[in-house]
Length: 175
Image (tube, rainbow, N blue to C red; front, side, top):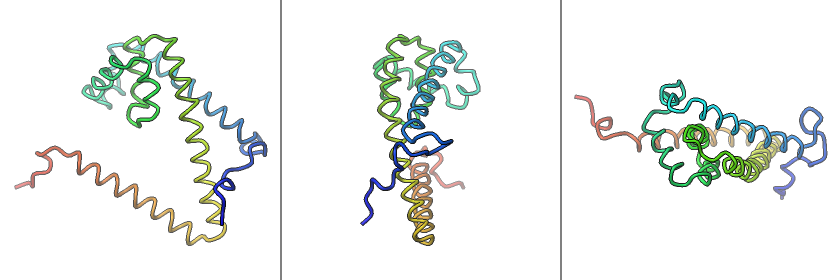
């Protein structure tokens, strides 16, 4: 039986660009933290112009207003929570900057978010990729089947979610 721990590379062995696995993970955590600081300061600089920016138009005024309500209610705690919610992860830091959330609290919340969310994805995603590569080395047919099942599951989920989120007008048959 294959142990799950064998799906993750050895922490001190050269992994990517001859850097050890743990150091690559630490660099990725720091890069995510830096990106969140950039998001905050861009949002702070844009302020009200966030709504008219290309990103603001793409996200939509209604969604930004919902995110503003979350930030106003929860403050820096919302910044930590945004790591765990896919849509908020990319919109909340901008809004936090535009709403001028206390920067020291924002730094603490984003640091804690990076330190808890990123390692989970780093180790989890690495285990999935390495496990799939090991499966592909043993049985390319099984690996292709697993990949096709994963693609089918994502496609089904996407279609199901879009159908569920349609408005009643969109669901009515055209006459």
